[in-house]
Image 1 (cartoon, rainbow, N blue to C red):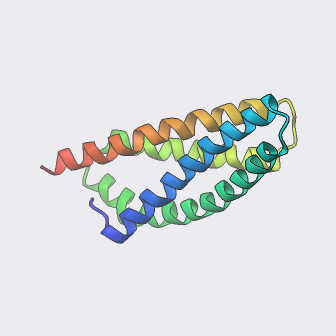
Image 2: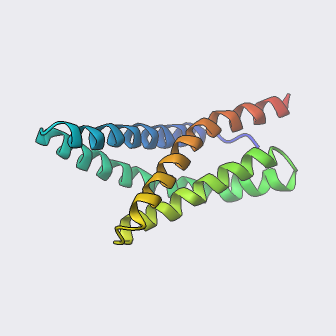
Length: 139
């Protein structure tokens, strides 16, 4: 199920921004523990704020994607495996983001963070693979 160009590019931009801000936050968070500069602390805070804002846009695009892409592709039996993996990674990211933001447990937070990071980077690999598999199937 090919998406309209404008919607497709907005998805690419949104998820690209999530990848960049997430990776940037990871570097800044690591650097703030290594270097004593306050700039890394500020960079980490700013990147996390932008990441959260862009994640809200991603939720909107994912919600719009369900009727125009997911359901139609599922009914026509196209790209089901990679699509299901994409949906699962996104669900894990949503749940862990909620947990990171709202759960104050210091015992759960490190696990939630690692699961979120792993799912996010796995999604960044799965995203182009899903597109490639879908385009290959169209031919």
